Length: 375
Image (tube, rainbow, N blue to C red; front, side):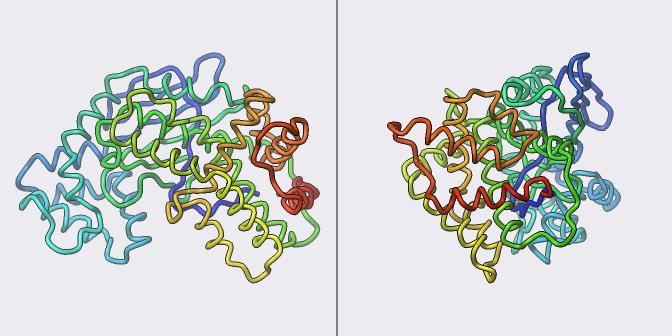
């Protein structure tokens, strides 16, 4: 069972040599002889909307056509999910307004004003995606060391414009959406963002390969709740290591913002560990706890994604002492071995200044381990 309570998150995977397909503004990468992973880059909606924003008039037929594009439909579903006013009719009406007047008066659920302000940078970034055959190689270089060789699959990476989310997944876990107005012209930042999300798809593919037993009855709620928290700790933390924004030497605006998040959480790493332990304790022991709220505290921007940082620091320790292959093995083994390896490294190196989990957290990990073949 793979259970995520997603706010932003995230899902795409490792990619390979490029096979260019210009139809409809999309490009498809096919696997080489030694790889079984593919990715389709879809920027049709982003192209159509940014091109439209260079005009001063738009017909109803053109608005209808743009609204029906795959990326536009993904965006409409996302925005209407958190803002009841974000209907398809409002998508078209406000888009028409910004084209004809240069702004949106009143509520702007699709944030067209920001898209228009960044339209030049977005078009420049799309041109880089269209012309630079190294994009998938750049992503692959980040992911490969942490990925086992038996991963096969394909995914659609949909680059769109508009809305309030940086990235999101709706329904199909093999489609990931990213809002380019949040990226500007930061090509390297986009590479790292896509690598993060692609690694989630690698994790998802590995999870599907695991042989799981069917439980005789409903799984205990404390086990399920704790597993959700531990799975996201592993998933987001290791993805943050795979696409480590702190390694970008000359960051542009988007990458700088991400680096600031790493730095902020780095200054309070011990408190972040303590916070995650409290959330996990509540998830396991408190039958009245709201799992959504526990998740939101640790894994969303409400508190700067503190649990991402906890998992990231665990992954760094594992990489240093057990190697990248230890993290790659977790793809097929899941979050419990990830936690166990970290705890083991701490015990094997008593003189190191690691941030160590309490005994109560170790007990919860042991309790969940007994059920991991059902999860």
